[in-house]
Image (cartoon, rainbow, N blue to C red):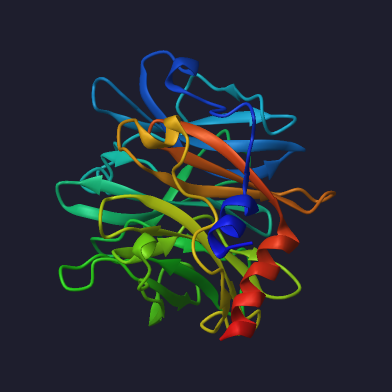
Length: 312
């Protein structure tokens, strides 16, 4: 079987896709990239939503089975109104949810005329949300936290954007989630067509016995097509890449992924591992318009990364 066919087969789209569309939330023009978490025995998604008034916000959706979701009508996160953050947080999308101890930390790119910064907030009950602080300079759209300290420090991945190097995946460390340093390049964009333009982190890293599994996105050079792949990082030193899947694991193929607000996009900011089946549930934005679900055995993704490592 060719590498391309292995990649196509590794993630299975749910037959009910798209699971959530703008029609499920009155007034929405798009319901897409969502953070994901287990909460009180349910699948919880934090949806990116924008409407015809060009306002962006986030809504909570919950589900027993991870397929049929109930969406809260009231937004959970909206543009900041307090004087400290209002100049920097006027458009809120693409959240990542990371549970550390008993707190759910939410990091998202906050947009304003001053650029795009990483905003850190938290909740313990998904009823109230507290902004903590801005944790990255502009422009940085993709800060993602690890779910635990490593060697006494918090760790994050991000994708700073510049004119010379438009998209690389970096790693950094912090004693307190606020002050970040020891920045190092983790993964460069590749030489394959699918990720030649840029790469960046997606959902928070997943701890496995073999290493930290990271789902990341790649953007093609020939056209702005977003696809997803995975890599494995060392458990004790996540600045070391153990292996990478040979190419993408899911790319835009279906009509709802090909055509929408932004054509040819499969982009994820949330994933859940089923504790019983050890299946990875990857919730992804399709064409920046709706939400799909793709699944794979967690072990298959690990093995794919390790096979690539053996070849190298």
